[in-house]
Image (cartoon, rainbow, N blue to C red; front, side, top):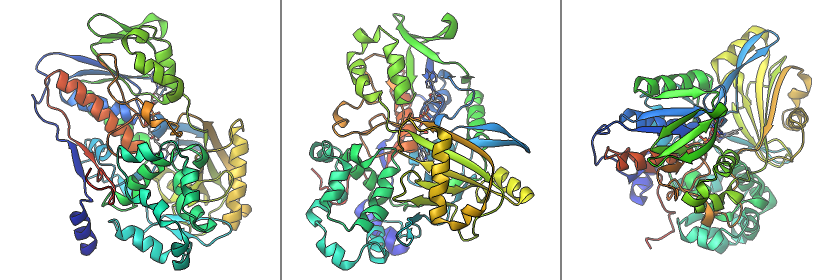
Length: 509
Ligand SMILES: Cc1cc2nc3c(=O)[nH]c(=O)nc-3n(C[C@H](O)[C@H](O)[C@H](O)COP(=O)(O)OP(=O)(O)OC[C@H]3O[C@@H](n4cnc5c(N)ncnc54)[C@H](O)[C@@H]3O)c2cc1C
């Protein structure tokens, strides 16, 4: 452990400061307002930072609940109400910016509990274990290769080591210049790995980004390999809340915001943006609106394209933003989430969270009754279990319940005891709102700053100049958007953090 940490320090694998923040008054020196559209991680991160510095923030969220893709809401079951989430989330330890926002509601992050193990299941090969690796690269990669049953020394000799080098050399400019037009599939083919190693070590990883390997940029795969495995000293370990996300995160975060003078309006959708001469009017239903010099659009990609399309003034104020929407607004493939309340339990040795490789639909399974308080109580009361099944990139135009049944069928091939259990309840959803990272998309990916004065973007599809992904990218872009506003108003900005900004073999240039 000590050796691993020391190696990490020597290699610069640690939390890096990409913006030290500071440089201004602790609060805005004059009254100023901002409207944040979207109450997911990105919007609430922006709003929290702005409100703490004295900006009068209004968050407009179209759904009835905060949280977006991390939301939770009550569902009436036959035997009572249960909170149901949009889907299980792994809170990785290198999510420095997201964790910094969460520390506002719990300085010790006590509500996050380590999730032990990280097995990858397949019906044709023994389980691969991603958990319990040394925290620091390259020791984690070496340990994974040394102990993995999916890859042996002769396989490593046969693989194309030259083709593998980009995976170790992530560079924020070069990687995209060299690999953004290639698909993740082509990059994986070029490694000449045995099929089993490819499936168990790489494909399962690529799938977690809500894109098919055949439609995903190889540069993005390299960036994510760096962000999750080779660029951070925290390890491939993650935590998860022990309560539903409304109780653990959204209610306390909204309260924190309100204590700092912010407002959250749920069930209010922004429909268009109009310039006012001194800023922007964000129109909502029924002709109502909210005016402010600064607006943060923190919505998912299709919603952003719709909002931009409904705001004709942006054609003159932000032609680059408007031009980017044709591609950016097309989401990745649909993802499906099915939560089953079953009448019995799976084997006691099954892990809380398992990734799945090479099933046509199922990508992961989570045992909620061993994770969160309310499902745990339900299981104790009924003798049942609560399982959540995910497909991160599935076939389009298949109804949610059909996908749920497919996933359950595929799970029985991995865990035969599931065939003996009957479903008491099912809540299934299929949606397509995740950003696409298609080949060639990097150059035109919008960043936080737009070409319209006072209009900023935030979200997990928005470009950052440092490696980040998913929840962490949503939070980081929210904080960066807030920082632009704070600097414009001469208030101190918030620090922004990154994993090691470049790969171990990227050199200094
Ligand atoms: C099933 C599933 C599992 C996941 N697992 C993980 C994981 O394990 N780890 C991880 O890091 N990430 C995971 N993610 C990804 C993560 O959820 C997202 O990266 C993150 O929540 C994105 O946050 P966001 O704020 O950018 O967008 P969103 O959460 O989409 O928030 C956008 C908000 O804008 C609102 N909105 C849209 N249009 C309007 C409008 N016109 N007016 C007002 N409001 C509007 C929406 O209702 C929404 O609340 C998972 C996602 C899913 C779906």
